Image (cartoon, rainbow, N blue to C red; front, side, top):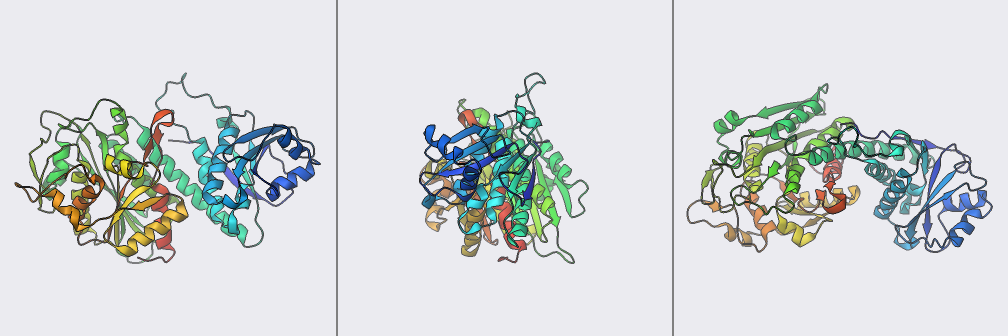
Length: 510
C-alpha cells in the first residue's frame, strides 16, 4: 500500500541561500520572534516583518499565512505558522504547527523541496522534535484512495512533486541524535500508515484472512520475524470457545495471528507481547447496533492494525529484543448460528462466561488470546489494545486512550512512553470493587455489568484472564479513528507501542 514518499535531509548552509522551494517558519504572538524567522527577516531587509504586519498576522496559534517572492531569499514561498505565546511552546504544539503548515503547503503546486525550521524552536533543543516533525510530515501527506476508481482519485498536485524536507542541522553531536530521531520517526510513520490503511479498508476486503495475509507480507524476507496463523480447527483443539462463539455468526472464518520477532542474538529472552483486538466488522451480533454510523464498525479491528503496524516499524528499526504480536480476528454478525444472549461459552482458560450482550464481543476474543499468551509464551509484559467500550469515550473523549493495569511499574513505563511519543494515555482504576458487576447465576461470570463504569468492568473482565501476567489494557475506542469530515483511522497506538519497545531495547525496565 504505497504512500507519498518523503525524504528528510539536514543542511548546514545559509537558510536564506539554501536551494529550496518553500520555508516553514514560526511566529510568536509577541517579539522577539524565533531565530530562523529573524534570520529570514534580516535577509529580506525587514520585508517579512512588514508584510506580516500589513496583513495583520498576529502569530495566533494554528493560523497560517503564505507569502511569495520575498527579496533576498532563494526560496520563493514562505509558510508562516502561528505558534501563540513563546511561553506556551512545547513539543506537541510544534508538532501541530508542522502538521498545519505542511497541510497548507500541500495545497501549493510545483514544490519539490521544503525547509522546516520548527524543530529548532523546541525548549531544551530535544532531538525528539525531529521525530515529531517527521511523523507530522507523513501524517500531513497521508491519503487513502485505494478504493476509488481511476478517474476518481484525489487530485493533489504535490503528491507528485514535494519529495524532500530539509532541516537546518543542529550543531555537533546533536546532529547525530537528530538523525536517529528522524530514523525513528520514519519507522513510526510507516507503521502508523500501515495501521491506517488496514483500518480504512472496507470490511469486505479487510477480513480476518486478509489480516493474516498482511501479517505474512510483513514477515516476507525478514529472518528475524516469523508468522503463524491458527484456524478454526486449531481453536477447537485449544478450546477457544469464546473466540469461536463470537465468530460463529459469520461465514468468514476466524484467525488467530501470531507474529514472533527475535531481534537479539543468542537465546531470546521472554518476549514483550502486544495483543490487538481484530473484529474486522462489528454489527453487534444478535444485540444489533443502531444503523447510524454502523459503517464505522470496520474500525473495530484498530487494535489489530496497531499491532501489525508496530511490527512494520519494529522490522524497520531492527530493535534487539524479543517481541510477540497476537491478533484474534473475526467478524461479529447476527447470522442464524450467531451466539445468543443467555448462551454460555467455555473459554480457553476453562472459565465459563454467560453472554448477556453479544455486542460485548471484544473481551470474549481477547480473553482467549490472553489465556493463550499466558500458557504459550511466559512473557515479560503483555499489553492489549482494543476498541473495547463506548463508555471509555464518554469518560475520556478522543484525546487519551484509557489505561488499565495490574502492575504499577508497567503503568509508569507506559506513561513515560506516552509522554515521549505524544500518544496520550490516562489511567483508570482496576479495583476489585467492580468485579461484583460481572456476577452470573448460571456461569462463572457474565460478559457485561451495568452501564455504570462500563470501561472499567470490561477491563475487570480481562483481568480475570491475566492474573499470572504483568499486563496492561488500552481502551482505544476514542482514539483509534476520527468521525465526521475527517473520518478515518488515526493509526494509534502505534507511536506508543514503538516507544515502549524502544525504551525496553535501550535498557528500560523489563
